[in-house]
Each structure stands twice: as C-alpha cells, then as structure tokens.
Amino acid sequence: MPEQEEFVFYMPVIEKEDSKEQESFNTAGAGKVLPVSMDQINEMVKGLSGYSLDTIELHVKGVARTGPVVEFFIGAEGEAGLKLVLNKKK
Image (tube, rainbow, N blue to C red; front, side, top):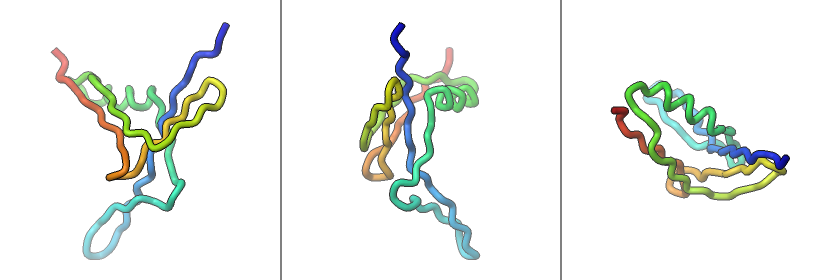
C-alpha cells in the first residue's frame, strides 16, 4: 500500500519586540520558520465559529519533498504569503 502524502507549511517567524514607546513586530532572521500542518489550520478555522474554510491561497517561496512529506516554504511579507478565505456557515 503506497504511503499517503502529508503536507506541511513552514511559515516565517514574526517576533514581537517590546519597547517603552510602542510594540512592533519584525520578521526573524533568515531561515527561522515554524511548521504548520493542515490539521493545525483546520483547528484554527474550527475556532472561528460560524465560518467554514473556503479557499487556501499559497504564495510559495520554495518546496521540498522528504518521502511522503511535501514541505511548502511560505515567504515573508511582500515576498509571498498564505491567504485563507472563510465563508459564513449557513
């Protein structure tokens, strides 16, 4: 029986910087990413009661395959991204 493909998305890490004057967010150094699975995306959507996931739009910076795992590397802001389109449940 063939192995089932698994998809993992690697999102760039955004770090929060606290200063006395204001809070700001900056992308972390090159190569710092966080893996996010489809299960995690679905769990996030479940937390948005009254909505269902319609579309996932990926702007992929790179992709790798390790056996049955396909890894998508999502770029930083302005370079690439991930767009989730939600429809209100009926």
